[in-house]
Length: 629
Image (cartoon, one colour):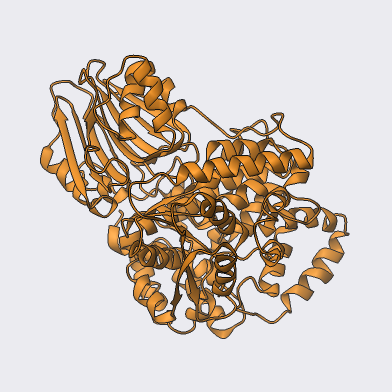
């Protein structure tokens, strides 16, 4: 696991500044505390920081082949590198290391960018082909590893994180107002946008080439629904069991200590169950709990750990720890992210790093197997859609609005209010509303008149329609699965996990997002994912013999924190300071009175604005650190 940076000029007579390259690289020291490397030759400069996982002795980067034509810096893990090594060696390539990085070098030498499709793993890499004067960037299929870039008039700059990219003096720090609007809508910035106007994120499953100033970005993979897969229940369950077992076994390859994040939910428990089969010695598992019982899942994690006989480690999160951590949000995030579960994810990563260097997580199961309550809600919305509008608006909605406000995790009033609010929208907009923070109408009330005038287009949910334009194979609820894979998971959840874990120099692997698992899940008919209102049907059937029954029957519970209560108590002053009227007025983006109304309503218990307030808080803290213009 590493951090990578680079700078390539369009003209052969230009040379990157080694001092700038070093400053950029130094900003990624947390991603790779064990080693660093630099390559500057002609118009190209590459650098990296390394966290040693595979081939501790000889895996130094930047890495090149026997003819020193292709140079590579790489962040991630290639899980089929041993098989690729044998294939490439048989084709005449000489290997000098046992590193997975070297298969990228020889693959590009052998087949060019077509070799990217041979890689199974999580990765973001840069390759400089010296004779062709071409830079190639690539990002893994689901976007597990990040990659930012900026195309300047005479050069391209790239980095694993935005904090490193902005160390280059020519990268413009102007705020992208479209990206800000989309952040407020979705709580993350959907690719290819980034929060700064001059910067882009390479989308998942894409590669980029830059030759003499000419840029090309192309996809090499995408999720395909509708392909023929196992349609019978028994066949599907057997195939899923076999594929999960193979994926987890491959993800256990490591030359350093390894463990598993265990929440007690079905996804992390599934990963732990298969990992326990193949671990050398007793598997280490790690979980974090909360003093607030409505958010605490630690008892479920302990139950699974006992059933699997793992070496279980647990830590309880207090409100004080969260308060101390909120002030560090800009250190953890180089781009705003409105997901408060970043806080416990960081603390879990820090706790886990004391014992191991690699952890497996269960991320991806909800998006692959329809595990979120939103999928059930879409089905229920179809039923409510047949009710007369007067009944929905005149009876159902007022009844829900009169429910007392509870700040418990996924409380009934919280779920019902969001459900009813989405009923009047088409499916795509409804999905965005249920998952996000500020609707387009609410943004028009939040932004100042000047900000609205400067927006290239009015606030909207266009990002979701742009994502769906890339899939012709998804139908019905599969379209929501695709949106979640490309959006909420790809640019939200995986960003959160990457930044939180790498801040602690911990590598996190996601075996449920192995290509084989993803393609198998996409090939299954929807009735094997959401059976009536039963979520993750096939997955639950696949693991029912290895996990406790109570795990399989538990309702979905996210990795949430008691923000609603903390915003009235321990975090109240932090929130008030970041959103103070004079601060908001000085920045000129939002109406101070709009934010003050949200604060007052939440304080008084009239509304639960936890999601909106955290989305604002994360942006304000980021802006105070990065000073966009």
